[in-house]
Amino acid sequence: RLPAVRLAGFRTNSAGLADVKERTLIAVKPDGVQRRLVGQIIRRFEQRGFKLVGLKMLQVSEGLLAQHYCQLTQKPFYSSLVEYMTSGPVVVMVWEGHNVVQSSRVMVGATNPAAAPAGTVRGDFSLHVSRNVVHASDSLEGAQREIQLWFQGKELVEWDCWDQTLTCEK
Ligand code: ADP
Image (tube, rainbow, N blue to C red; front, side):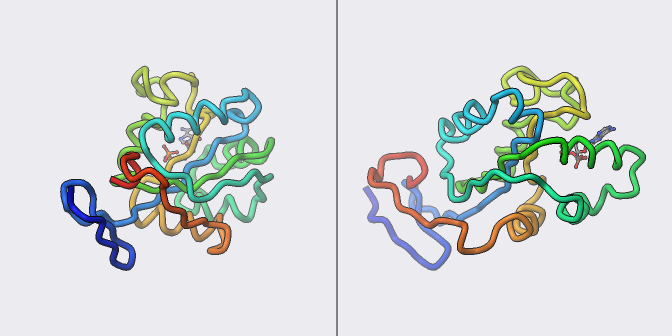
């Protein structure tokens, strides 16, 4: 077994390859909270081996949403999106791990649940694009921007796995 080598922002996995500490923003939208899906969604990310480094529940403001969805403000559905996203609290999380941005998008499924395969969050729990249960950042840059928007630095927790064989530390 290779020794664990730690550099700033990097660690080596079991194959001796450097892993950037990639992070993404996942949010359970108001319909997911109302339908008591928070636990099931968290479970999927833990089960996959990702590491939870930030978590909070909040009522979203229109201002925050406008920043979060800055590329969508001119879309015809934007006002209904704001109504949906402010209709109740959301649970917002930061997850860390190898390829977490891309893997999360696969786990969440297509924006339109009709195109999301069974086994994905949207494919298993939703029917319509306007009630699609969960948000996942769509790129590394997007994830970085969204994490900074939703979380203060001190709200994100650096922690080490006790058991090095757990997937999050491999
Ligand atoms: P994603 O959430 O998969 O990254 P987008 O960034 O394109 O997708 O859209 C953001 C959110 O806006 C979607 O998750 C969905 O809640 C809502 N949305 C997107 N397209 C539509 C639409 N045609 N009608 C209603 N709501 C939509």
